[in-house]
Length: 141
Image 1 (tube, one colour):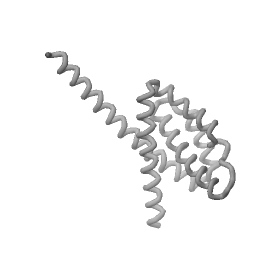
Image 2 (cartoon, one colour):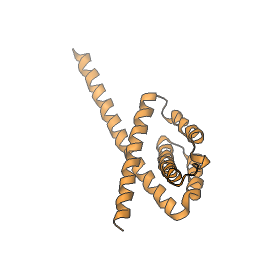
Image 3 (tube, helix red, strand yellow):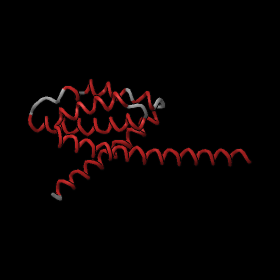
Image 4 (spheres, one colour):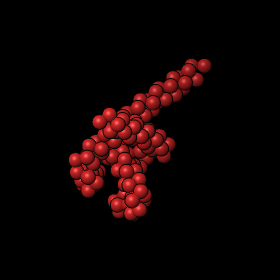
């Protein structure tokens, strides 16, 4: 009877750890989104691409990589939306192939596909929240 109790306690600890990691990844998405918009206002998309390249080159942890990926995802969304409205092609850096190459690096930091999917989901929820925050900031000007 003692072992099922220990097992349930371990499951509870594991679940709590994943929930805390999810909150951290969501916050990384929010922060990455805010950084993207600040960089975009300051230096446009070309400046953002330069910062993204150096961000990925310097990423030495899962959180650092997620931060780069969050900025990248926000930039890709904006580029896709703008190119669609203007009827021009997306910037090559954000096309499916190049973005996919950068996304596959996530497996280095999250080898388990379930953890990878959960981390990406939480990150993108944070990026979505960052978009809402930026829209509110613009609306309040």
